[in-house]
Length: 247
Image (cartoon, rainbow, N blue to C red):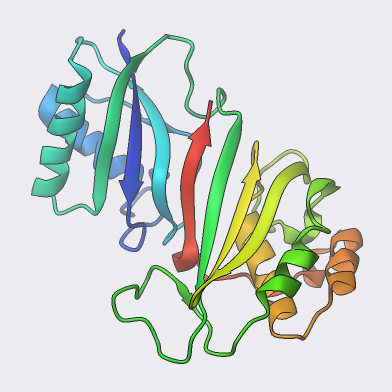
């Protein structure tokens, strides 16, 4: 059966997450319904990452098998047409025919996430629901310095949700950078794979450093504690974006 890779952008606010869930609206289900509407068949979409409720994507990747061969641009445009009709906040950016062994999840080499903090007194108007608003000024340089303690191969139990289904808490974090761009602070994280809530847990912990409540040594101690109770607050989902996936 012809297999297609599709690259996806979505506002995660209206959804219970990427993964199809009984009785809840998900991104996966929205796209599968659009595929059924244009192709006349039920197809299962498999994504690169299971983003949580409220998390956004600039470059989620998924693959799907269809019984009929379609031009990739037709796949993109037809899915988008039905997504628009259903008033979904999801857009297919690209579609491409791929080999049978391409797997959006297991073929992925690196996943890149962005966490956005709007750091100003005034609350967001245009970016409401898409950033974490923190009125008190944060020290982005101190946050970046502390973040480097977390880069590398570690046991990330402290930064892992108790609902995480990963077999091991040990992961390699390739990048964790913090930078201020005007009124916004960006946290960028890259790794082959992440634990459930890992990026949001890291962002919430680094926020404590930015406000002066924690030092880089405190972050190191939290990591080495391997105890979820040692984690800082979990940052809200609305500031998190799956930016892109490398293959």
